[in-house]
Length: 137
Image (tube, rainbow, N blue to C red; front, side, top):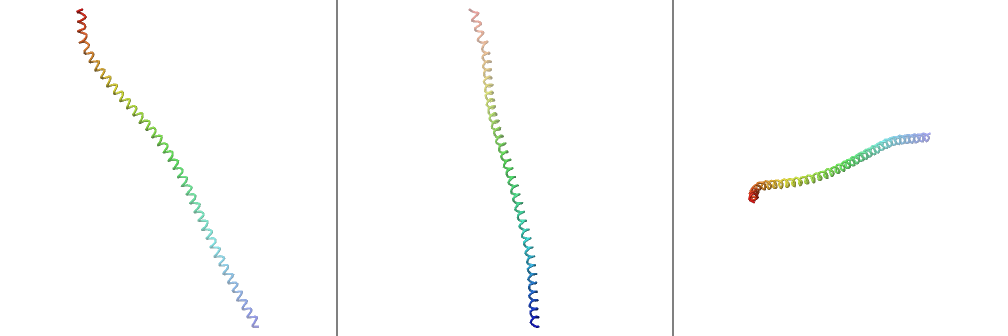
């Protein structure tokens, strides 16, 4: 009888060992499952962060494009303004040239007026002797 009991003890020990191994495997499986969930969650968070960064990059690219467009518009406006300024400057120079020519013409006209006044002063001096010459004849 001793032998069967010894075998029963061995079987019971083996059952106990198997049960402990099963519990250990279940705990390990539970730990692995939790670790897998955490890794999955971390991967999802990283993917979300990557998507947010990509969205931020796209928004920045869009802002850069808008600013480049505004810069081009302002540059075009500036060039047009510069053309207008150059045109107005040219007109101003032309008007100054006309003003200078008018001033020269006014000066010449004044000189002519002074000259004609001077001539008119001498006409009576010429007319009187001519008058007497005609009278003597």
